[in-house]
Structures are given as structure tokens and as C-alpha cells.
Length: 394
Ligand code: GLA
Image 1 (spheres, rainbow, N blue to C red):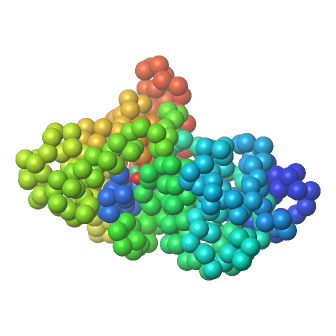
Image 2 (cartoon, protein in one colour):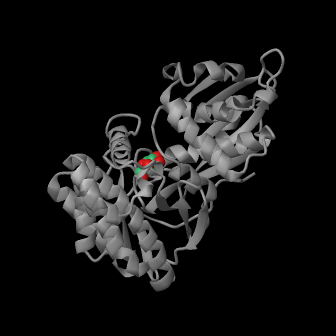
Image 3 (tube, rainbow, N blue to C red):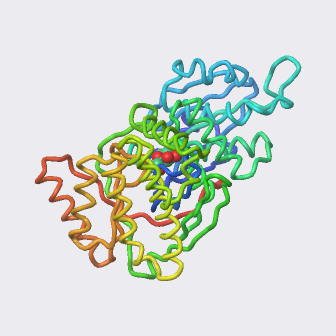
């Protein structure tokens, strides 16, 4: 596979100044709770996006990647005019890194020169990634995290990791146009080997919680259905709008402010669809709290039923599953998984299963067979381990 450094050399004929990387993530539990101010419990994975960076002296930014080797180049001073209004002029993948550059510079009026320049040096960025795209593993947060880490250091901006995660979300919301929350960027920035990130998405307070899968004899399998999804269109935004409607009907700023005890009143106040959306989010917040507490007191094996309940809630109440995800989850469970659920925004992508190490091969085989029997394209099944967040590699 071409590395970011190889690609950089091809692009510029010179060596990069440095290489940074950031990981994708798996969300263990807590889906569609982040933009409701609630709780999530993701972990960063070993699949990463790397960026090799070099300086330019013409105030321009050029990006290229192994999955679309046609470079995209703009003047840094033009980013403000491009995003968000004219984002369609930029090929989609490049909106992520250029959007991060824009987000980092946007609020830094003081850095701007009197003649309207940006006051920071131009850059060449070459990307390579092994995070599967469209699988619900946040390939986008990985590209954002790598870009934000590299530019922050080179431009001497001095942001902390939470601010870099915010810049990534701003890029995703405004430059790409996907109305997502901040979970993925936080997981990619804050991840730690062997641990999950228990995050309060309102305060952005994060706790590192040891997962202990391997010592308990467990492995976390990702079952990528190959069904592609995109959050800049359709269902994701509709779900978000339903949540905002539900919160408004209950007179609270966000669904985070409701508890399971409020659901009876919610049911009286709302139409059935809005109520079920609300019930998913409120019960999911509680499941995250329960999962963290259970993990701490009883270990990872005990969280299986919470994973299962989370999936049922997404399938029946939030209605973001697809037949391939349901089949993967049901089959893994029937083959002995401790628990299983779809992960990420839904409408495709991947499911996860927590599986005894000795059952990994038979669970994977059972899911592959079930997909073949159903006439679905073969799933891509692989184990993931919790890994470190964004960092400089060279
Ligand atoms: C996507 C978004 C996240 C989050 C999840 C659903 O991954 O990027 O912000 O909303 O969906 O939990």
C-alpha cells in the first residue's frame, strides 16, 4: 500500500517535514446521543489515516490522497469564501481536510495580515488511510484528526485536543454539510490503547475507561456489511430533527435532560414516531451509563445484554438499521456472541459483536454463511483493538 510519505514524494519530489495520524473509531454503545447532549462510549481503533506534510511559500494549500490522486489546491485566503457557501466546488473527500484548515483559521482574525492574507504558511498534505470508508468507522474523523493535529502544530496554534475535535466537527457540519455530533472526533483525538472514552457530549468531559476485552478472553469483531451510507443526506438529518422536535415538545434544551421516568409524559405529548425516536435516545443514554458502571463492576462480559438492547432500540424505535445489519447481529448472537449491535450512524455500515476468542472463527463463518444464504454481498469481518488517538509519527 502506498504510504502518505510515498505519495508526498510523488507529489512534490521532496521529503515531508513530518507525518501525523489519527484513528477511526468503533462506538461500543451510545448511538445518536451525542447531538442530543448525551453520553457515548466509543474507542479508537488501530486503523488510521496518515498525513505527510510539507511547507509551501505561496500561501496555498494542496491536498492529495491515495484514494483520489488528483490534487486539489486553493489559496488559504480563499477558504473563507469557499466554506460553507461554495463547498460544492470542491470534490467531496477534499472538503474534510480543507474544511479543517478553514475551521482552524476561521476564528483566528488576529492571525490575518493587513493585506488579507492568513498569516500562516502554505502547506502540501498527502493522505493515506486504512480506515474502511462508509463502514461506520469514522474514516472522516480520522482524516479530520490527522489534518487538525498536523496543521495545529505547524501553524503553532496551540489548541488542545478538545478544540481540535471541535474544529473537525465544524468542518464536518459546515464544510461537508453532515449535521453530525462530536463523538467521532473526540474518540479519534482522545483514544487510548485498551480503553474506551466515556464522554459527556454536553460538557465534553471525557473519562478513559479500561475495556479489558483481551484479559477476559474476548474479542471485538466488526462486521462490515458493505452497505454504504452517507450522513450528509437523508435519514441522519431527519432523525436529528425528530430529536429536536421531541425536546421542544417536552420543554427541555436537549433530550439529555430527560430520564426514563419522563417517557410516560412524552408518550402523551407526541405522535408515535417522535415518541419512539425520543425513547431510543433517552434509554440509550441510560444504557451508556449502565454499560460503564457494569464494565467497572463486573467486567466486559456483563455488558452483552446492553449491547443487544441498544440494537433492538435502534432497529425498532430509531429505525436506522437495515436487513444486513439485523442479520449480522442476530446471527452473531445465535452463534454465541456475548452481545452485538450495529455501530455508528446507521442506514448501512458495520455491526459489532463481542465474542469469546475461541468462537471468533465460528461466529464469522456463521455470519458469512447467513449473508450468502440471504443473497447479500459477502461481509467483511475483522477484529479490532482499542488504540491510541491522534499523534505525530515522524
Ligand atoms: C455518526 C456521527 C456521530 C454520531 C453517530 C451516531 O457517526 O458522526 O456524531 O451521531 O453517527 O451515534
